[in-house]
Image (tube, rainbow, N blue to C red; front, side):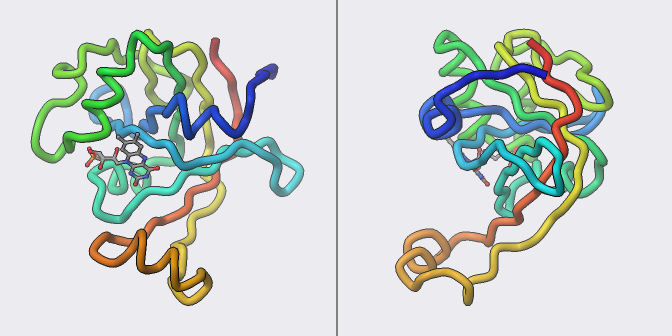
Length: 157
Ligand SMILES: Cc1cc2nc3c(=O)[nH]c(=O)nc-3n(C[C@H](O)[C@H](O)[C@H](O)COP(=O)(O)O)c2cc1C
């Protein structure tokens, strides 16, 4: 497995699509909070999903998820995935990306790179363990984030 990047801009500036489910029934959303690293001596990807997201249901129901990154030409599609909910519209067709299987999960043909991840761990970010400033800024009116850590089992280019 090989991947090189400026790790601090990879999520924050490029954004990514987080996808969970099967080719017949999946959901994707844009994420810009996340990380790539090491845990339990395994290569891992970490994402943070508010419990209010439709994708949250898919993250809980599936053993695998993918994190995929896109060229600048797909920015508009990522904006759709980040502003519409799969609960309300058929985002996959609306955004114009081409879904395809990726290991035990799903990604899109337009991706530059896809991390196929096997879920290892989930935990809710607890308000009492963060500074008051973050509590007020990010959780005043919004649902909490669940942190999901997945083992990166495959990197598709
Ligand atoms: C640039 C960008 C980054 C985002 N990052 C996250 C994130 O890291 N975690 C999260 O829960 N929501 C994030 N969102 C919001 C979700 O993508 C958005 O609410 C989406 O419509 C959820 O879709 P769903 O209901 O189909 O899951 C982000 C949105 C944008 C535009």
